[in-house]
Image (cartoon, rainbow, N blue to C red; front, side, top):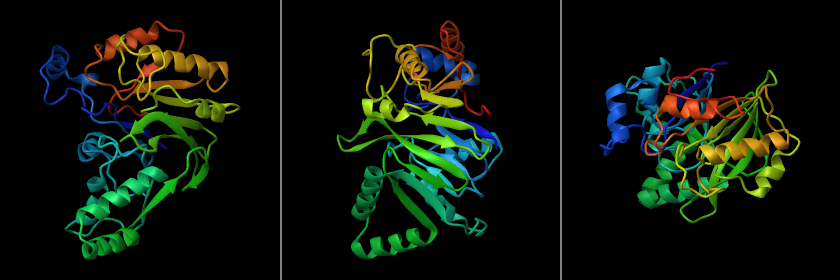
Amino acid sequence: MNLIFLGTGAAEGVPAMYCRCEYCTQVRKTGGKDLRTRSAFRIGDRYQIDINFDNNWQMHRCGIDMYAIEHILITHTHADHFQFEEIVAKEMSVSGQANGKLLNIYMSLPAKAWIENLLASLYTPKVYEKKLRILNERYRIHGLEYFREYHIGDLDVETLKGSHRLREGDEYAMNYLILFPDGTRLLYALDTGWYPEETWDFLEGKTVDVLILDCTFGGRTDRPEYPAGHLDLLSFVKMLERMIAINFISARTRIFATHINPHQGLLHEALQKKFDETRFNVTVAYDGLTL
């Protein structure tokens, strides 16, 4: 089962389209691993984590499509992680060649409530009822609780709570601890910030083989020691220190940094060099990287 980093950028992507700073200008010139679309992750043919504005281009670049997708796990409803239009694009096929399978979308219960309220506000009651009927026939939105285990397709998925809060409400980014049929366990942890204590408690006694962790603010050194919302290189390493202290990760764990912001100061190779100077074996992910 191929695992693909479809995108590894933060909300603006890299380079940021409205920016001509030195960093973004350099990336436009040199390209390569520093060109980053918004973050998303593909798991084989049937599963994807997050879907954003860049989804169609990500499919083209990686030589794949969405035809067989049955399950999309959403970390949270910020626009760089969730674009409803990209999901319902399945019904826009003029040729009618999309598969007829139900498409399941998973998100936290607060995220599901927000989506339902948003849809209700966009349409008149009559149109909304029609839209809802079509959605229920072709799609299924599943609201998930934090710190629970779910069976999704062939995967066992446990849900974690990050400190990234949305719209001053009760939606926090949901991270996914995934057990594959072969026994491999992966944590996809974006928009984490420093984990709340209830999340650290949940990780006690668990282990992981692959860790994919937010490093939005990479080279920034002006942030809190234990930041909410997003990590930087320093707090990323502190997270690893605590994870190894509770035996959640080990020397065998493959660790990847992703969700990179263009205004954190370090280009790909420079950020990788900084990680190489730590005691952890961290790979800075890039768009198209396949595990």
